[in-house]
Image 1: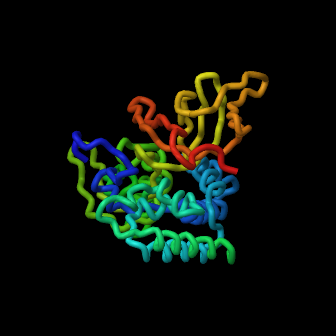
Image 2: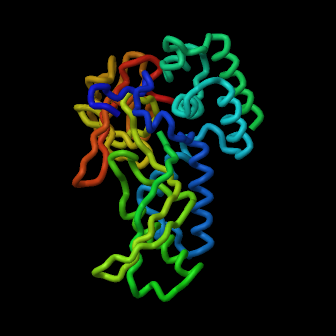
Length: 138
Length: 176
């Protein structure tokens, strides 16, 4: 990222390498970290000795802030959001915060309404309804 | 934001461990890598290093002339956590002070929310100090807040990040 362009996630100015990086939603990270923790439990008596503070705090955080718990639901959320031309970053912010209205969604991810993007309110509304349905049937 | 990236690190195996061949050597390399990984804790570019997910490839070892150790380039995938300026996310209030609030978000413990960035909230001192607004919305220890990241600073010496956040936009504030 060049020095002149100041970082700003609201405008998707987060550096080329991050725009292309894979982002993960809290619920996806939760499944991965929980699985890792279980693997460690099988290998030793106290798995907490084997994990770093960073791992433990992160696990606590994602468990608390996952909107979806069921692995199939998590996969569905990723699938549904992937149908709407979003960047990885935008997809994850939406999957994490689960806005209820179109207005709220735009406030959370202003870049989806930026010039040149193809998201009209109707499309955003449909996307939010699809997400709400997954939650309902989880 | 949680990121998944592919990295390439060099793992050094001391000469003594090189009697092992094949799978045992591979195991020694992975164990060393895991150890290096947890010790590293965080980097300025990737943020906090949480977990190594897969080892993609272990390259050919190069003998280091003077020590006899062997250096293996290892390609692997890992999950990290980094805060981006302008990003909106949620955290938990850990401490309430007159000047503002300290939050925890993911592995980051130093997330500062200044009272100047909490529009319409006023400090209420007491044994359990809180911030209150005229709609009776309360900000106290344990409350979840949705905030926007104003900036994140990398502290080289401590190998950790400090962040400044605010509630000065729509749909931000306490979340039930």
